[in-house]
Image 1 (tube, rainbow, N blue to C red):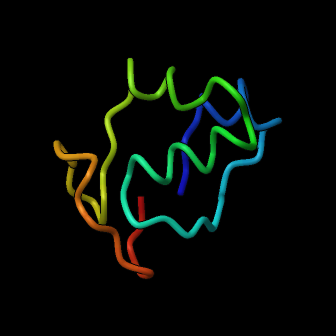
Image 2: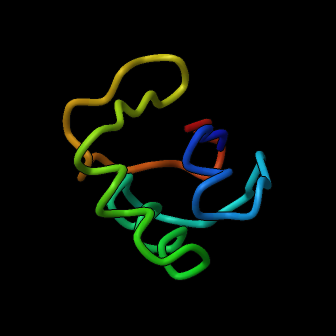
Length: 68
């Protein structure tokens, strides 16, 4: 997962993460535990792509191989 500029603002500049999550929302919640405030900001102004395709349903299942 790569999320600039959120990485700089909430995660101390780290750029790549391996996070186990069943959905995009679960992924954002997991990252929010590392960088409080990230999930709310991302929900307000981020587009998310899964395996190169923009996801409109953030509750869609993710596989262990999904690249977000």
